[in-house]
Length: 249
Image (cartoon, rainbow, N blue to C red; front, side):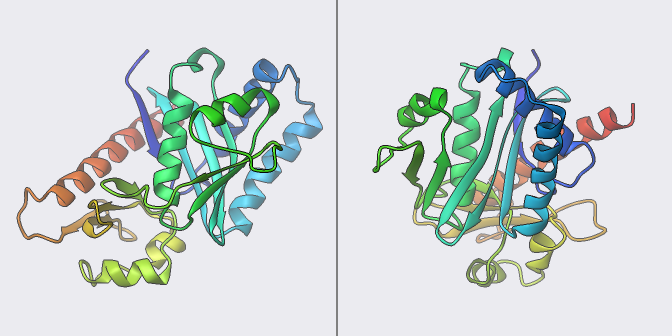
């Protein structure tokens, strides 16, 4: 086992991503639910991923990699004040090692910029998992909720969507940033928040540029917000290199 990395999937339409999501789903249904997906179900699931990406503005996704192999993923979207987790899958041989919890935590932190709670419909054999990590079902159904307000505090989180309210705050640090870099181009962007949810560091990729623009509240090069955003980009670039190499084999 190599070092496992969890990275945001800013552009889910990148070649191969949906195929890897689908492979994880097929294996999870077989091993966890004892269900073999039929060819029609597989085709429908593949279409579902693609339609969700095209239809919903505030999509988000994280994937866990062992080397160049995707071994886990979480995928969903934000609507109104809720973050909907549509899929959370971990490869069978990596289950019960805390990976599902880590993917969930990454999604909660990132989507707390757009939502105040997380909403998930849990499979029967996954309900105890969500209960263990703070989810509850007020109506005692398989629909579970968790308050995620403020989860971005003291964290560096990726931007899958940049609403006007957040764009206005970012413009104070970086007047060159255009929200369409995130909302339309789906280019990588990260923001770091302090314990009062003030932005202390920000970084973004511009179209056609290979290196990110990184700025911070302080002009000091060792500013904490700047260093955390830089580290996030370094981790992303390393993983992207691995994926690119794998796709060209």
